[in-house]
Structure formats: structure tokens, C-alpha cells
Length: 76
Image 1 (cartoon, helix red, strand yellow):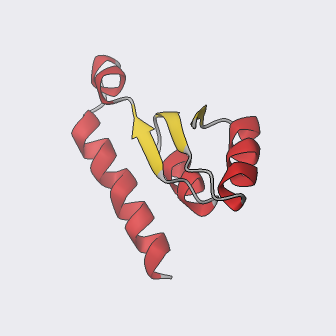
Image 2 (image 1 turned 90 degrees about the vertical axis):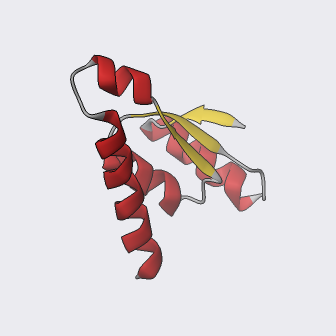
Image 3 (image 1 turned 45 degrees about the vertical axis):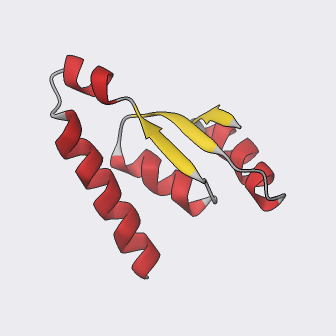
């Protein structure tokens, strides 16, 4: 199931993940969004790399920051 990572999307995704439905959160632009997706049980988070690059952000660096945050959270 693909769901945008909004407040409402996170609530819906958490409910689906609790029922063992694999969820991919889309429209991920910030490390915090990836973190929240992981916290509610997402199977995947889909950063929009091209849009990040188009907006002047180093998309690969941002994705690396997202992964680092998820990795730190998993270690806690």
C-alpha cells in the first residue's frame, strides 16, 4: 500500500502496518518524515530524490541523512 507521509497518512499507515499490511510511505522530503514512517512500521519510505535535487537540495545527501536517522532509531 502506498500512502503519502502526512499526519493522516501516518495514522492510516500505522493502522495498516499493525494489521501486517506492508506500507510504503511516499512524498518523503525530510529526515523526520522518514523517521516517523519507520516508527509506525513502514516497510519502505520513498524519498523523492529528483524533486529534492530540483529544489536545490543535495538529494543523495538528504537520503543519507534519512537513513542515518532511521539507523540511529533502530539501534535505540
